[in-house]
Image 1: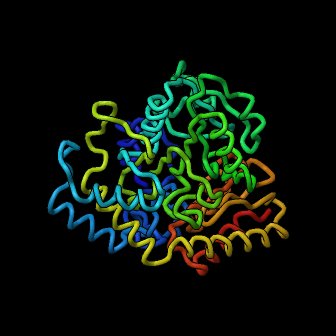
Image 2 (image 1 turned 90 degrees about the horizontal axis):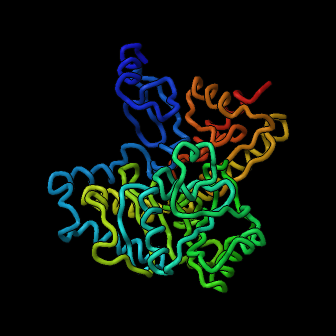
Length: 385
């Protein structure tokens, strides 16, 4: 990366991200290319946004065709791509209504307002390790005190139970509890997978205590874990579900799904559910279903995790391998994840340090076993003493 561009970046862009030292210029499938023409296997996938591969021809065509007709006209008019996408999401979730937003944080803001409206209560319970966004409402439900501290006080009122511990959840419920919000797998905490019955037990508690269950599928949804929604493995129906990231293959969009309604004037979004984003999302879902990518995510994900566990036997640095589908965390014995990410970058692999001791893999759902082997070869080299 040139010094001139670094200077422009530091001068004009707020330094809110820890950037890697390269400019990505184009992509194809599971690969991206930097401005010097170097090729990288992208097993970070734009932080789980790249569902069906970079420059996917069918999604690209849908975007281009829609851009030639209409991009956005606000939500004061009906648009066909939005209505068709709402129907798809309703059919996939079993929830009747959709509110469209720009991102996962926006979707969680809608969920907070909806839960307050439905219950008439003000307090929320989230879990240790939770990440639900960086807007003030979604940040209030996020566990990491360090990123919250500069912005206190935050609303809504939030308490934090221990993830995987339903007894701790029950002890925090009171007469003013509106909802429990939970991730089916905690991505930003380091790909923390719940116990088998945890989500179903949370559902049971919420039902018995008359409070809502919100499931945040922003990172886990859209087929990443091998099912369209990760919560479906627990045979439950949440009251509210939020999605974003992989819904439109990287085009910004989010959604809040529920059988409950926000009514006229209670919420809004000028660009939420615009025609371009919805066309991209429709094409992304169609591509996932037509090409059995949920099955591929589970198959390739299991293959990669099995190979990583085999590597663990000969690599002292690896403590554990956890995940579901193509959402994988490699837990290290030492807080060296950032170091491993830099080493793999220099050898042509993009991955991410989700926690100081966790390397995270979030490849496109089109990833192959051959590409998993390529990823493994680079990781193995980086993790040698």
